[in-house]
Each structure stands twice: as structure tokens, then as C-alpha cells.
Image: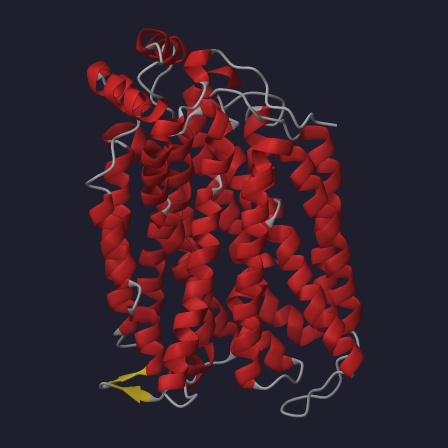
Length: 475
């Protein structure tokens, strides 16, 4: 069992309270990419019915449009690390902000269904970039003693974006008298839902001009003096800058710009630690978490819950998501990464199993679908419990681990590959759920339960504990 005590550190590695406010501002600014990640991923939930009616498409085509963003996510995640190693972390944030703005405007004003899908792909590229650059930048700027909690800002921002998107959707729906296609100022309600994201995207872009570049990137391009200033600002005046810069130089001495070739090795083509990162990413998605955030409104309507209540339950699961994330932020540095993952996997397995049992009582077809009151209540409780256990464990910890578990020489590229695998798994779940739920909703949740159960031995055998270590100690 991991000790609750923080390991002792040299004075130069301890955080200094007078600098924490500055570090939190930098971290929160970088995590705005995570906010947009969550917002853009989830906002589509409130527009599904309107898009289906506007473009007169069936569930299979609709699923492809919803999942189109995930294709872009995989592309953005796979390329962001290498781009960041060449032009810097901050420049990648600015590129992502521009793509978010373009996607929001284009998605709100599409000419055709495929036009909408193309703008969703562009937004997906921005999400993929943000999913990589946020954790990498935060891990490289944060003092080691606070890195777990600061790293969890990324997930906190994601779940806040998810919740706010649902709240904005609910508010716009109210203004449109409950009609997703109701007209507001010359546009349909669903168009406003997609277009509002332009505001946080612009804020993200502006913030990228007031936060510093990563000290590790600065040192990698020979800007040691600028790196010293950043390290002084985030770790304190009492830190021995010669030692810190020397540590980073030593860790990077034999490094090249990270590339796919650097990750090659081992029995299965990639270094074992890279496979662990991919495994974490894939398991995070295969438990079906994004079914809740992409399809929750239509999911609850499919088991007989009225549309207004279904939007309310979408919002309440988002609030539970935030609560779980706060719990993880409090405990990730106190108890470590692996214990939280294990608690989450056990809780998710039980919750998903209970949901699968409850959904097996669904009866009827078309507009005459219903569930017994007891099973309906249990399904709602189980869904909220699942989100809670995911948020306090896998939702936060995976991003923390991906930001810190890889050796310096491959961090950006390995994080990009792992995040790309995550988006591919997300795409599989997203496009398969409509067909699975039409076939057997309970059966779909049995599959998700199986993956949650399999994640337990994966954690025990292969996932490393990184609590309290500097990035230079990761190999």
C-alpha cells in the first residue's frame, strides 16, 4: 500500500507558497484547452435530435457525424507532440485556439451534413492537440510536490467544460421553448449551442500570450536564461537554478527531438512504458464513459424518460463528474496514482454491472418504451455512480500519468501516441453504441463492465507509481 506521506525532497524541489498563485494561473490558463476539449466533446449531446431532423438522417449516419470529431482528435493528438517539440508548447496552444474558433463558427453555420462533419473534424484536431499539450506543458512547469494536483487541472477543466456545455444547452433550449430547432435571433437553437464555443476559444488564445514557454523546451533550443527565469517564477527564488538547469540538461543530454523511432523497442515493437500509456488510454474509453456525455439525453429518452428530465439528468451527471474530479485532485498526491485507479475500477465495475441489470428490464419499442420504476431508479443511480467513480480515478489519473510517466526523450511523442489511441477507442465506442443499444442496451453495458473488470489486473501488473518523482527521475 502506498504511504500517505510525501517523500522527502531536496530544498530545490519543494514548492514555495509565494509562487503557488502564479503557478496556478499558468496551469489554469493551459488547462483552458481542456475546458474546450470537454465543451466541444459534449456540446453535441444537446443537438443530436435537431441535427437528425434538420438533415433527415438515420442513427448510423448520425453516429458517424457525432464521431467525426474523434477522427480529428486522433490526428491532432498524434501530431501535437512532435509539433510542440519543434515550435514550442505555447505555439501549439495558439494553433489549437484558432482551430476551435473555426470549428465553432463552421459547425454553427453548416450548409450540408457533411459540411458539419468536416467542421467537427477540424474541432477534433484542436481537441486532440489540447489533450496532448495541456498535460505535457503542466507537467513541465509544475513543481514536483504539486504536480499531481496541478496536472489534475486538465481533467477539472474538461469536466467543467462538459458541465457548462450542458448548462448552456439547457438555457438555450429554454429560450427556444424546449425546441432544439426553435428560432433565436434568426438561427435555430442547436446552431447557437455549437456557436457559443467561440467565446472560450478566443479566451484560450489570448491567455496563451501571457503565460511562459516550458523551461524544458527553452533549454532544448538553447534559451537557458529564459528557462532560468521561468524556473525562478514557478519554483521560487531559493531554488538553486544551476542545479535545476543542470538536471534538465543531464536528462536531455542524449536526447533528440522525440519521434516515433525513439519509442521503438521491446518484444512488441514499442517500449513497454509506451504500451502501458496506450493501455491506460484505451481502458479509459472502453468502459463507455463517453456514452454518457455524447448520448445521455437520447439514452434516457430511449428508456422512457421525458426530454426535459433527460436534459436535467445530463446536467446532474456533469455535476457528479466535477465532484469526482475535485475528490481526485485532493487525493492524487496524498495517496498516489495506482490506489485511485484501483478504487475507480472496482467502483465502475459494480456500477456498470448494476446498470446492465437494470437496462435488461427495458420493454416496448418506438414511443412506447418503459422500465419498471425500481429498475429505472437503479439505472439512474448506477449511471451517476459510474460517473463518480470514473471521475475520481481514471478521468484524472490517466491524464496525470500520461503527462509524467514517460522519459524526457520520448514524453511528447509518447503522450501523443497514447492520446491518439484514446481517441481511436473513443471513436469505436461512439460509433458502435447506437447499433449496440438498438440490439441490446443491457448487452452494451455488460461489455463495458467487462472492460472495467479487466482494468484491475492491468493496473496491478503494469501501471507505475509516479507520486513525488521529478520528471528527470522517470528514466
